[in-house]
Image 1 (cartoon, rainbow, N blue to C red):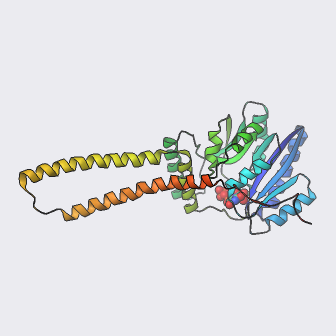
Image 2: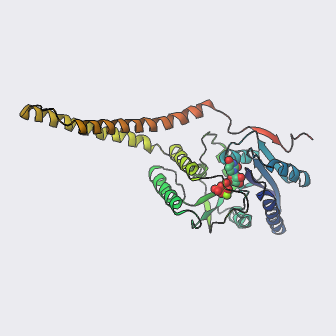
Image 3: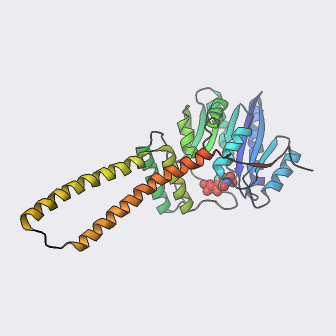
Length: 316
Ligand code: UDP
Ligand code: MG
């Protein structure tokens, strides 16, 4: 019998979890009527501060298919997804959010695509950004345009972390143990044939989103620095352009002084140029710093997550 691991990262999801559990078990039962399938529901509690862990303990007591991994603190969704994949045992792994924004009703369809052997991965892509602030949509679109120009890895606009994957693809993802994880890039970097199912965005059922504009902005920078070295090239090119300009300016000034003498003037323009060059230099050093800091974090080889408790280690 084939086993499907359902991996769910959860951070402060006490309101959504019961609803999610009802829905996922309903879909699982529906699939078991048609196919010879087994399920495991693997919840990753990402250091929640509410009753999420208690709910998971309760669920794992009444339903032997429910397993959980609880982190010692909040490590972020990327870490939670990694932990989920690492602890999953299934022939297939499906990752989805606890807030029902990734509707479980798509799983049967995803299973058909992947089990037929035609695809290795099925994912969803939201076609509209309805209900999202206009400004946010604009920045999101610009981000996808920029990153796809400067990175060799294709980052699909609107693609989500809702993924149904074969064991081979999961193992490929697990073989990338990098600390700075940008899963939109990682999913695409490992390759494999992916089917995108298009759907309209849905609101979360309960609780609140953990994202705000600033966090999204920093996350987009993470994506750029993790999957492109173009900013480094931009820094070098800027440097080069300014060298050329300065050589021309030196020549012009030398000639001008030889012909017309040297009346002292141009103090304001001098200050402007100093500011410009100073700013550019800091900007370029900053870019270098971004890569260096990431290299620094990678070389420490810190674990991606630390487990506090699982359904097996829980004390009575
Ligand atoms: N999540 C997590 N760790 C975090 C933040 C979020 O595991 O630090 C989980 C969260 O519980 C949810 C999923 O990641 O299941 C998506 O989070 P959210 O709904 O806040 O993001 P959005 O849907 O708004 O992009
Ligand atoms: Mg959500």
